[in-house]
Image (tube, rainbow, N blue to C red; front, side, top):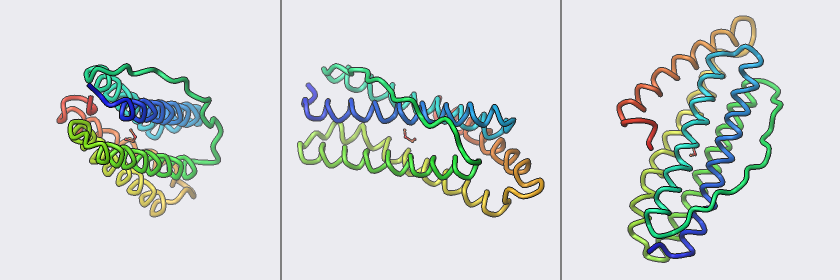
Length: 177
Ligand code: OFO
């Protein structure tokens, strides 16, 4: 039976994953409206991935004798200056989620909840990958720039990353769910 303190923090984490999914979907919508298909498709996949992270937590809580209460989500930011702002916000969001996961690990360590600690290892590794990906994208943006054909080339580049992400998901048997 899951400790109520662990249940509470895991439910809070579900809400953060849902908020992250909503923010990424909002970014997708803005990018699609601007005609940046590569970036828009990438952000749609990221939004879906965050939803699978929320669902994975929900299933774990319920399978552990708890009750995964679904929280409401605030309206996410809808307007962005440019793609640079979007990917800077993605990195900030991923860093926030990483901090949150690390706090969960601290709670479970103090309570000697080894089962949940084992479950959370997947999230620790996933966050490392997500932060790395966001940094790689910002590095590419720095190199390519937004001048002239830069934005067009950057969008194509992100479409390429998308294909690699899909291949990774297929290898893992589907987006980490
Ligand atoms: Fe689920 O927060 Fe990123 O990956």
